[in-house]
Length: 114
View (cartoon, one colour):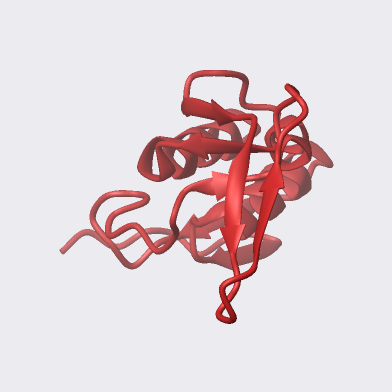
């Protein structure tokens, strides 16, 4: 097994969305960052349903490469049988490829120097 130098200012453990974003931001500020992940492939296994808000998509600065579908409406069913319809024609949620999402955030961190 090859050993990696631990000479860094910050070690971020976990290359999920929060870890990759943190590593990217810190590296962008000039810190020497190591982003550590326990799995062989970033995003696998997936730990999320893959539904995010349009705001989350914008904040991630990823673009459309991980977007599978935009949801503009839904029916919400309550346990007592009540139902609420959501609509209006604008995007209320975005279905993403969660593995691609994690990979892209990790790639951003690496390009920033992590």
